[in-house]
Image (cartoon, rainbow, N blue to C red; front, side, top):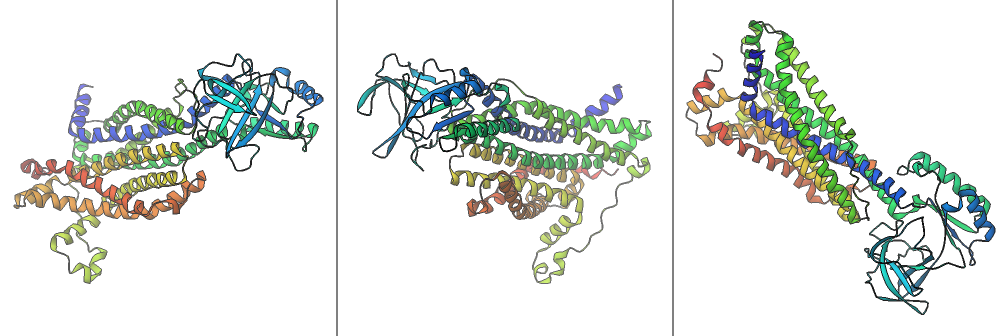
Length: 589
């Protein structure tokens, strides 16, 4: 047991950089996936809590007749839904100097349905006092004590309120004047003589659950039944599905959910590809160590377990740290909805479902990939593992067939191109990883362009920014990790160049040129693939269009990838120039 622990500890010490890189990649991936995935759940919970706490009406009946609803119609509604579930009101809209004012008249102090939330001041105590809706992008601002003239009668503003049915910060549409919006909303506290508005709540308040299918079916059924009794010519019946604030909030949450599914899958694939690349190449470097352990009597399971523990511990550490990152991202995106809506407080309940799901998938996948790679390695006999792999024989690359290009290249570029295409697995792993990173960055930028051009999409803007940041960090980690592995695998080659008298600049350029070429290929290929991916995303979430993306985004995205490629090589410059020539040249011994 002690020997096994010592061997494991040496593995962690030897590959500390790769360990930290895997931890960082898991933090970024799980943090982004769980953070974005939890947004819709938080909004659903918040909407449900708000729906119940404010006792929001499910149906809104607007009489088309001048005298409003008849006593028989009110009696029918009271009997059908229960008197406690019916709120009677009188409202109308006035237009003056292109400003539309909606006036509500009902017992606002004692109303139990659609409770007005007092932000400032107090509710009316006298007949000449009113409360007004808070300021939005289109509704005017008022101060306590201001005077409002309604039908040549002066009223004093005594309070500022929020109507739970008017949550949106953008335009609240007029019900009377087509294609126009409200500039003022005023609430009179009085007993109306005419009832032309009726708000109805369902008895079962648990049915709502953020616009689920059962709720929708029940609401549609009740609308039809009520319409048949009262008559289509006499009344307009609306539900929360026609409410601009509540339903659009739900719709945006649905879009976030769809975005989550798409990008979680993509982030997951990129992460698993990088971890698989890291562990497969680490195991390849450990061939001689594995052979020694086999000759010392270690079982195949015991040997593979050492590498499984390596990736498992890295994944667990990264996953645990990712929880805080994910929760912070959820809070930021949820707060962004406040730019468009009056959002209920962020639910304090912590749901581990999405976090556990993403963390579990990544942990299980990385372990299985490591086990599969490890088993295929330890099945070899010790003599096979101790025998160094024969170097790949040089082959002509396809560019050599294009003589007018190849003949003009200098020797260093010819050797670079041959090295790039000689090691196919290294080439494809690198290029595919960079393609994935480029697609994610491009998708984030494209989504941002569309959200800005379409307007009223602050939540999507925030998601786009988060996607760009997390994709860029993932891109940096991916390129750094791959570059670091490439450098580690070529210590002997680097040492040989140094012995031959190559300067530090010449040695690093020799290695970095290959990285830049592979990064360039991945970045360029990422653009057309990103185009297809963005088209799929826009079609799925019914948001944005390809033509809304700025032309420079298509150029900037691959340049971002190339920049991170350059940045990662700068981080590894010292590692190359400090290569120990003696130990590196003795590797095969």
